[in-house]
Length: 371
Image 1 (cartoon, rainbow, N blue to C red):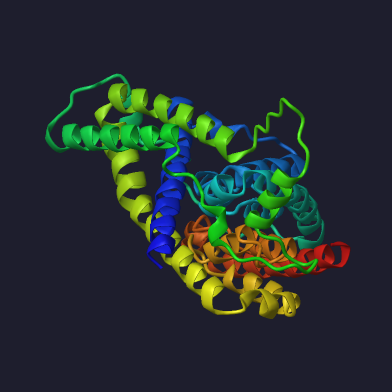
Image 2: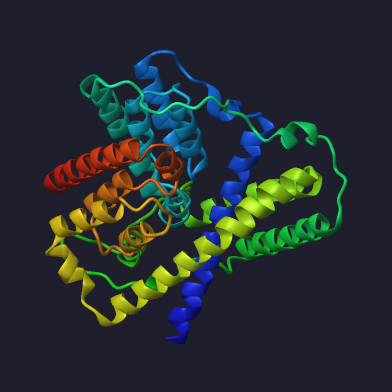
């Protein structure tokens, strides 16, 4: 049990660190581009749908927030909003990139295609005009323009900058020394054709003959090198960025708001899965109830919050649930990107979620037939 707890803690720190670094990078890109990172909008409805799907494909909630803002300002069709919500997996997209990078990229590509098709069909069949409007413009914080060149570090901002720098430096050192590597042997696995664990995959991988020189750019080691490099870039951002960016965007938004939630959900679900996989025959129950799991994943996806979807990401990474369940879950949920939509129009939120759930069930059942 102690070994399991240590491994869960190590994996939780690794996943949370990778997620936070990626969120910081996207936050920096958005501010440095003065919002243009999200504003390249096409004029046609098909273009809007494609752009909505692209915004949804951006890991995290920022692309989703931008799409909802464009919809509420009558710059997006309802189909474009649907495309964003289907393509988006919220903050769990970061987690999937950290835990299952190869499968995550395949999943994101599938979600993008489904999102575009569903968005175009929605616009063709919906026939209603955008029911939400807002007179305010879509803009970045005024302080980001006024203080983008300022670097007057004061009081709490200085300490927050130092804490983030130290934390990121320790994280880079842990990545470089391999102290945060996954321990795949902790997962149980089945021998049937429905599910396979990472441990099983690794065993077969090592048993098979490999060429003398083999480079897998999506392997855990290479992904750690990539994230270590991104983390080094963020060290320089933390050093040279303005007080407003460090305090308002990095500390208040990411470190205070997202980091504790991501770590709590990650640790809690990994602990729950660790206990279940050790003492409960979850594999057999789920493998015999795939349709029920697809319906459950779709229903949980209705919750406009990042976190609940983590259970399906973790189960898939452990090889307990098949891909169709993860696909259905990823389609129906969009993190908390739709919360602003709920505030603006409960009717639009409800219709969008119902359409997403319908697409999720159809896609999940279709995938189950072909796998």
